[in-house]
Image 1 (spheres, rainbow, N blue to C red):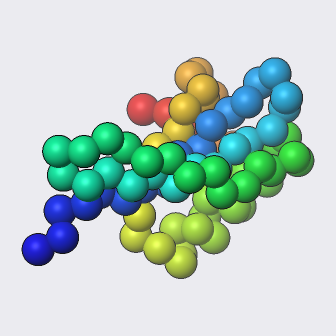
Image 2 (cartoon, helix red, strand yellow):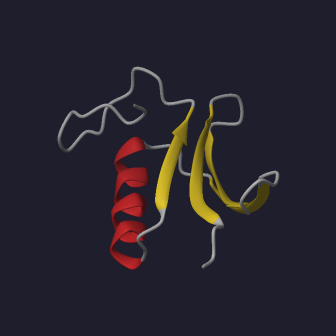
Length: 82
C-alpha cells in the first residue's frame, strides 16, 4: 500500500501580488518535497476561486491555503483558509 501523501498548496503572495501553486509529496516518515507548479499573476480572488473549482473537478487532491487569513470566497463568503 502506498503511504505517500499528495496535496496542492496555494500561497497568497501579498508582496508580489500573485497566487503561487505547489505540489507537495510526502512519503511516510520522510520530509515533504515541494514542487513549484505555477504562479497566477491575475491577483483577484474571484478568478482564483474559478481556478480552484476547476482543479477540484479534475482531482481529489487536498488543497491547502497559506496566507489567506481573514479572506473569504466571494461566491459563498466562506473563509478561504481554515
